[in-house]
Length: 168
Image (tube, rainbow, N blue to C red):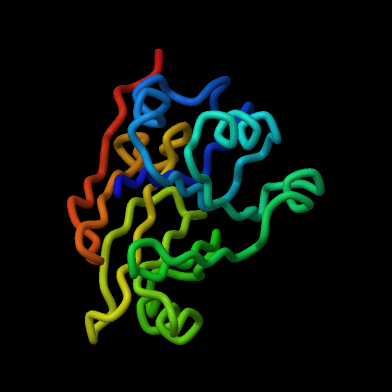
């Protein structure tokens, strides 16, 4: 099972459209995750139309239209792996411990908000935390980013951070 992970698209404030490199991967993804801060409903409409399955949540910059259509936190089981999706997880310091307490049933947490790519596990190795960064607003990061991953035999594999070329 192939996964595509993104967050913090902030359209049309930070970019006018999603990057072609990201859109080109939609047909290959069995499940697309978006961890909030869509900003416009057109991006949700586009991803719903082009994704086989979309799991999304709203973020702090998302207005009433998006909040009416998306949950604050989502959970889904895929091939035996339990995923949680949330936008904000608080400060980087203590994140793994805090998230393990907040999401005790999850095996993988997909989150956003900071625009900082993140791939760690809790001290006991039970929970993997993934932040794909932002494909449209790098903030203080060197690149705009998104992630891909796979599920094979009930295990998360092939997690890869993709750096996007600079926009001109």
